[in-house]
Picture 1 (tube, rainbow, N blue to C red):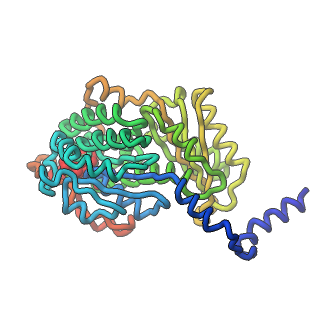
Picture 2: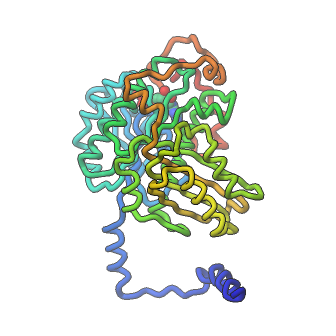
Picture 3: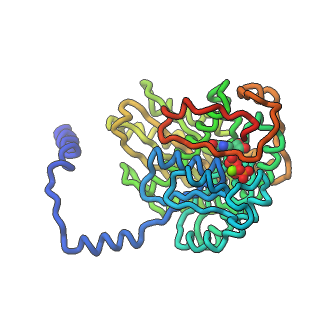
Length: 401
Ligand SMILES: Nc1nc2c(ncn2[C@@H]2O[C@H](COP(=O)(O)OP(=O)(O)OP(=O)(O)O)[C@@H](O)[C@H]2O)c(=O)[nH]1
Ligand SMILES: [Mg+2]
């Protein structure tokens, strides 16, 4: 038995290099067929924050999907990195943004609806990413979600709620937008920016936004790569659609460990993550994506999946995938998305409540000029491709939000 294992291990290492490539006469037709039946996944970032997250997603790289930015702000759109770009409400906004008004954002999306619908036809899964609290992302996202549903796509919105330090007005706008978006999306994943401060305390606001970009970008990448990128274990498009269709409110989390019991530790890290702000024990379905180095074992995978399954409703539909990343030697990373949970943010939004601004959290963000007058143009921030080169950027104070 041992020699079988040894020889199989050697084969795994040698196979890719040594088997000569052959082209069968059927290959070309097969290739065409695979192209034709391949899932079409569109990831659309709406507004300034959404577009910055699209740029971030392109920086970390995501295969076989279309990345799209939609904004009322032409200048910001120009600096965004995406496969396609939509200038929303050309007539209404003249490329100058929505002025922080979600009604303008909504109207702008309606003006561009035909164009959006034409583009989205044939989409299997539409991911919408936005930072709620401004005019464009908050107002336009629910309209885009409606268009997505109309063309038959499963619509998954992944949105952030503003930091309390941004003020109660933004929170109020965000909560109203969240209620609308929750109604027009199949699944709505909410990241409460305040929770980021539980992980990384005392962050300047602009860096906190980078973390927020990173969280949303990695979560969406993790979900789409389950079906689009070959891995150790892959998920069918039909399975992913199943989980995300009518998934309802959802939460996401990440865990990581390079310790001795890294599999269990990574799960514990994910389950204890402050981002996971809902009780997941009633979760209806879950997506688990594990990434690890070449030394990752089947037993570790079982440990991770079993622990998570044990934390959910016993009837929950759980899909999981695993991928080897050569650069992650000794490390196990887990992405967890649980749908059908009682998300406090979504429930509060649907009941017309506005989450309290807590002074305790507000003081954790270093805000440079809290009393400065607010300027309208908000998000003309160029996002460099690598985190390392982001640091010298100017600090974004409240007046520039
Ligand atoms: N992740 C992330 N969030 C951001 C960023 N900039 C702003 N935000 C958050 O997103 C919310 C909405 O801001 P924007 O996306 O700039 O607003 P917008 O949708 O472009 O709307 P208008 O500019 O008012 O038309 C803010 O209240 C912040 O909480 C960013 O670069 N990244
Ligand atoms: Mg904007």
